[in-house]
Length: 160
Length: 294
Image (cartoon, rainbow over all chains, first blue to last red; front, side):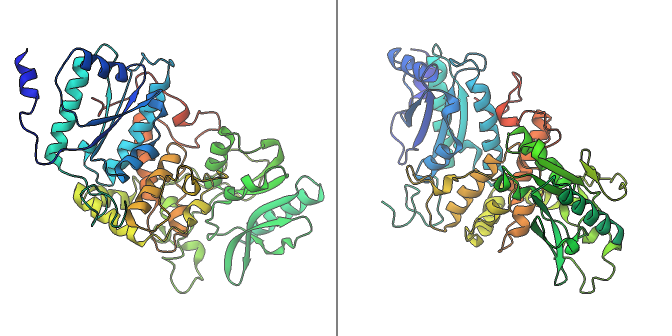
């Protein structure tokens, strides 16, 4: 096993593990993540995957909702530009996600909490790397408290 | 500006007499104020006016008057709004009679001196912020023109408040927005006054799924304002109506300004510049600049 892969796996679990919600397109990134698994590439297990038909299916509402429900980070991943199963979906997604990114950066959200990546069906290794990067950054950034006096899950006080 | 009022009244009277319109959307003066009004046939036209306090964006009334033949006082704010509405198929141009007026730059009532006598001579410091950034004071298209052509303005660079907020660190910005959002009472006046918020059902009223808590918490409020800004991305023409009508004085338009500036820099797109340009989010270029994608 390559040296870099050994390093990428943390030997002991950190006292706190980030919760990442990943929106993966069915045709590329989901298959890429699948390939990472069948290739037995070890990588962090912090991303909770939600499969969507296309990265352009991801509405900014869903991303904010994920943060609202206690995610520490959100990752949207789709086909590389030009590779979209629906020809042009990810081009539209890109503009929409750029707009959201601008706003989240403007209101002072840590840029490490919202990430977008292009991972193709053959890029199992890239998927593992992306997840490692996102997880490592979030371990540094720490838990996300959406509400000022919310609980550890970032939920509002008095909320399930 | 007695002449422009008279010209306007005569023009509108003619439109009604010739039976070209069912309604006229314009400004009327009463009780010392200028405010927008929808005038039906047979209304008293003697209060119709256009002065430096005609700052409302009248295009806000158009979607609900859809189906009728409507005349509209049109200054630069409305011009750009009409272009966006036309590109989105929200207005029927053949049922719309545009009365073009040169805009003298509107004054901000919050900045007005107690004595309003010299309203026409007030300098830039009394203007609405949007008027200092205006690119053109004349209406490029109109069915009827009234008034004399105004001179081309020299627009100011950038929005002062946006620059102020952007000079802060990320933590300070978050604290500043949290502070602003803690004031919001979610009366949705911003949504109501916005000429481009014309959805019959807004996402905040959705129940299944419920995207947003109804409770007025700073975080919910920020959630609402971010999504509203996203829905206006590449559409907002920065008329600042949302901020002007806010009863608690939140500068809501700062979020829209962020996106408008970014879309101009990134995609070379200025909302409402023409009626032909495709809205920025329904269109893409293969080489759109992506600088944060892994």
